[in-house]
Length: 117
Length: 178
Figure 1 (cartoon, rainbow over the protein chains, first blue to last red):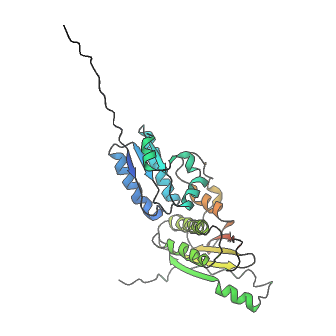
Figure 2: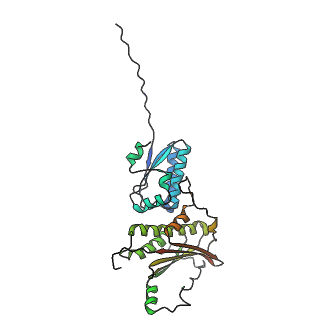
Figure 3: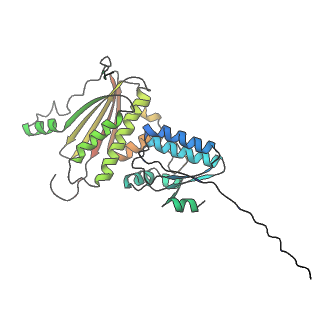
């Protein structure tokens, strides 16, 4: 009696996703540093990013430019970015006013954002 | 080294009070305007612009029944920040200069008038394209935000300097008393 062993192919796909969560104001003064940090993450080969703005109490046009720059770079590398809604209602309104909530895929939490890739 | 203000930088004169010629102010109005006008003059640097926006917010914080308090204070702070940063980055292009801000809280109707003066390069607002909303665009949101968040936005330039005038009508809740 011969035994036949089924061949099983096992493949594991791991998608690298980095979450970046500015903890304070994302304004002109801090946008440059934020952009540099984003750049170093992207340069390390990361192409999928979660931009967690839940703890961002203030966002101006320079901060917004840094966020769009990150999204552009991710997409240019074949990846994407998700944005987690800020808790601060005024910042949420600014994102809606500028229709950033249409440019980015907005998520309610980091977990939801990670699961969406 | 202690801070030494650069007194060599010329600061434009404040414009005359808009009511000064055709309207003689009553004692009550005069007192009110004096009590509710703030003039600040700061070095034009990114490290200082928040002082202007915070000061304007502090003025509104005294209004007890300000509608959507958090939203209105935030929008005011953002609008002044955007204009001030624009002055630092573009009018002065990171060179030395000063920004003078005049805040007047008018009563009838209740509104805040913010005037920002600089002596840097002039600016042509017509050359600034409106951002394409919903598209992947990095720049052009600053002035758009100011126009959206303020009730009136004016820019003028003259040989002595540039003037931004922002007006924000102050919405109140139905609750009485200030």
